[in-house]
Image 1 (cartoon, rainbow, N blue to C red):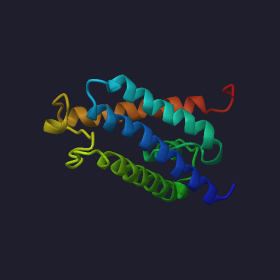
Image 2: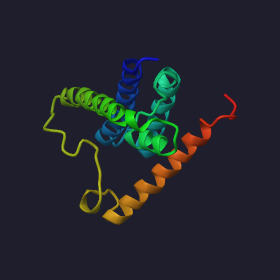
Image 3: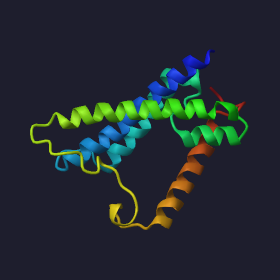
Length: 160
């Protein structure tokens, strides 16, 4: 399969992940009384990955995330030389989706800016007040487990 098809699939998959996942977070944050809440946002992220894994995963491998591409490369299941191109495609997909989300959110009658655009972080930017160490440990552990799931689910010998 050509590299352009693979990269296009990564752009599309990452676009959908950011649009559906981050879009649900933006909209849930904007409508607290009728929004989907944290569980809905979690489900939106999971369902967007699942739908794109089926739609274009067979073309690109369905990474849709730079950490996944790096993890697969470190595990010997993806060529290191392809990392920059995949990362670039993923950034393009994410930026395009963020632009679409901005257009949607800015279409509200009383739009006054995106603020944090449903982002979070550590310290004062953390909804729970967690510090940088807690944020890094969470990111590291959750990403590692996510990669273990991906590597296990896509290993040779696993039923299709």
